[in-house]
Image (tube, rainbow, N blue to C red; front, side, top):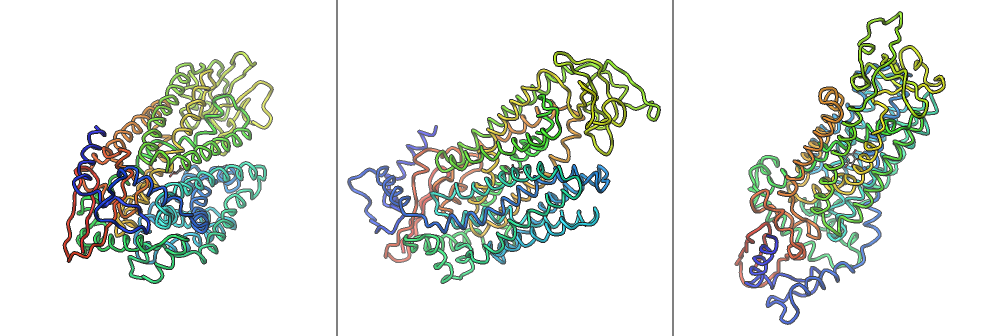
Length: 633
Ligand SMILES: O[C@H]1[C@H](O)[C@@H](O)[C@H](O)[C@@H](O)[C@H]1O
């Protein structure tokens, strides 16, 4: 199929497009086309020459400071679980308040991401990032000095507002400042910083968990440092050249372009951005709110569906439940010490970080499409392994053999369960058992301590700091010999998800929208990401209660499979293209774009030669997703 498309594409080139395929540098344009060298050779040579132009270190500095936004995203979403362990004891938080403090941030992020689109268009990317870092710093201060739970809620809401704006602005800013051959890598670095932030948060959680009193203040307050650093860094960083051109601020735009392109000639890039902005504005019909123009203009609408779909499937693949649940998964597989489980959760976060690094390396080598497809198929498979592990564990769950009673709570539902499986699915209960190293006996289902589910409300497991020899307490899981399958599934999951499904939705969204729709498109897709994030994490325990754990993970595996079909059909390859060329990938019917993923399609650069031949303008439409323009002036 893709060969056939390649043939058709070639024919179009032979019929007259050859003259358009040129080195995207300042080489002069030969409208007659190359005579001796083959088109493929020329393209490759041109690309090589282009890529050999030295990318100024400034672009890396710019990407690094921007990605601090990603770090704060990861840190603030990751640190809360450890902080909550201390907070719930110190402030006596009910389950409702715990849930409120965790999900309020994500909810606020969803709202501010949506509003961030408008803000981005009006004040620009740079000011939005400055605002986000200011908000992050403010939120961090409020959290670290919070005298009560209400103040904590305010702090968490403030942090959420910063998160939403940063999450939608940073990838766009990096994409708009990067040269196309490095764009994938540099935008993906933002995700590396997200997972890095989650990893550092888990270390900080581990370290300060020993500080029973006020440890949470340090955990939540430490985010002020990167926020302040980013704020001051951005005072010296420039606005995105594309936004400046769109706003007609020509001299500044040219200055920024020269700054970020170093020794390269910026005329062609400047002209190409300017022309496509004019063209895009004409094509999209001019007036009305941007979201309406996007919905009524087919290529932008298709891009929006692809962008939002990617973000939705990222969250439906269950990353945040797997991360959240990792400590329990590790306990299931034999790690019984609470403190050790916290440190092993840091190892999980590190694995996520490490494999994101692989994504940074792969994205501009294999391309977004192949990377995302490979990743989601691996994700679906590993979710199935996790589900099978949970299924076997549930089928071989140990029975309840010991029935102690307690004078205070004689009729608890927990003591009525006959096996560990229903006992661990009930959030009010835990499993207390004796293990002599070879077998498990004297097992009972006991109410969990409301204030700390790490121990039983009464009986042998009531004080986990001084458990009698050979006695163990399992909350949320059952000790079985199949737990290693779950552990294996967890590692496989992170290795598959982190290089592709983690970063690609953000990377692809930063590049698929035409400039006039970029802020709004990213606002919508980031909003979708946060909304599904809160939905999946809030429903996980209920889903697990209704469907059991294996049911929940089979469900996520099914959703990931649906995601695979969606991505296979709809995600075009954007690697190596200029941002201004990408709109053309969405010209044809949705869900046929993936078909143009031939090497040839990815190699071609389209440029607009200026030929003094009056005002004639001819457009050559490609049969698949590509569209090329010949602009004769
Ligand atoms: O891309 C990120 C990332 O991979 C994180 O690990 C996850 O927590 C976020 O929800 C996601 O958007």
